[in-house]
Image (tube, rainbow, N blue to C red; front, side, top):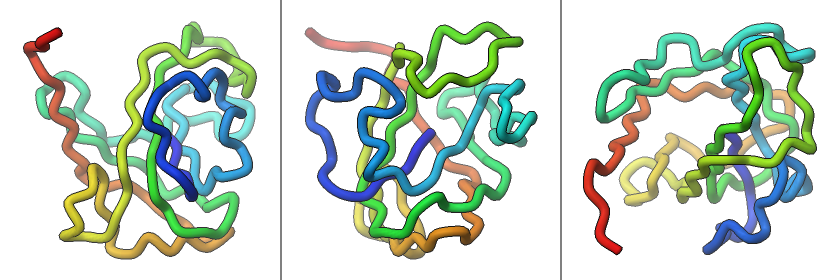
Length: 135
């Protein structure tokens, strides 16, 4: 899961690789267990076998400063022992808004002002997956 500043995308056409919005990236939470930068799964404590999923991460330092406005969560075709590569094409994707508590955003934070180098974590974020779709 990644948290960004600037304009929230309204479609996935511009999100073709992890680097697609690198200039707006504030925080990256890595779910791959074998990464070159951390060596651990930063989604420790998450429950992904329930609906809604309950997501909790470890603390991660922000890589830039700015006002958080949206998040991007995607899966990749990595196998368990592949090292993360920033050019890997995303598969399943979710884009949502980020706002302060009470704003009605998809992901709410006590403050959306992110500071370079400061630690941030997600705690008990609930993601409801629809069980029926209409086309």
